[in-house]
Every structure is written in structure tokens, then in C-alpha cells.
Length: 172
View 1 (cartoon, rainbow, N blue to C red):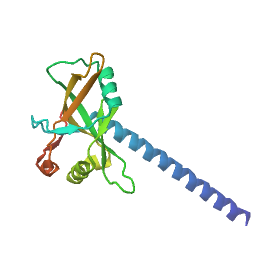
View 2: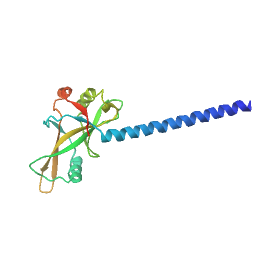
View 3: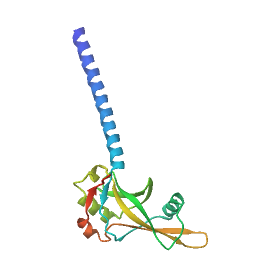
View 4: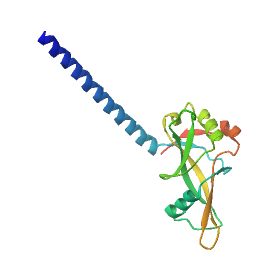
């Protein structure tokens, strides 16, 4: 009887240890996958049309200007931004953040994000791989001491044209 109790305890401990090891292995895999995705994002072919106007808050504008040390000029700045999927919530399947380096500068419009997410359903974007897109940043002098900026993304303005985008893996 004591032998059976000992065997049961050993089996239970063994099961718990194996479960913890599997949890750690899964966490390690997710970390490695995220690091790979960060260094190898998907890329959208350049369309040379900066049609999608991103809505950004005043605080985000200030952060972009100060972090990137941008000055008001007649020529726009061209920077690569990343479109990163936010984990889905109960009501919204796709929410897409726009990141400049590690700064969240805004989100795509709800309907646009839904259609882009549907289009990218069969790619790694669904599991968290970001998409790299070229952006056009125009810094504007609002007043003597105040600067603002407008950001346009290299995406079609109309969400119906999303299906014509060419998404490919980054070649390094």
C-alpha cells in the first residue's frame, strides 16, 4: 500500500515537472520567434504613393519630433515604420499599431485594419510578425515655438485596394 502511494506521488511530481519544462520551452520558443520576427519583418512592395494619412495625437507628434530630432523643412523625411498586430480582444479581431523604432505613433483606422488583417490572414502577420512600410514625415512649423508633423504611409488610401499589395519576406 505504501509502495502504491509512493508510486502515485512520484508520477504526480513527474507530471508536474514535465509540464513546467514544457511551459518554459514554449515561452523560450515564443521569445525566439518574436526576436526573429523583429529582425526579419515582412515587407510591402513600394508603391511610391504615400496615400494613407495616419492620424496621430499631439503627444505622439512631439515624441516623434524630439526622439528623431526632426527639423521643419520643405522636403519630407522618409523613415521605415512597422505595422504590428495587437492581440485580438473580444470585439476587435484586428487592431494594428504603427511603430517608429519602438515608439507607438498611432493606429490604423478600424475598418482599414480589419481589411488589411483579412488580407494578411495566411501570413505570419497573424501570429505577430510585423510589416515594414516606408513612411513620409512632413514636419510643419505651426507657430514660432510649436512644431507638428503629418505622416503618410506607403499604403493605398482606399481599403478596397489592399488586395493589390505585394507582401514579401525581407531579404538581407
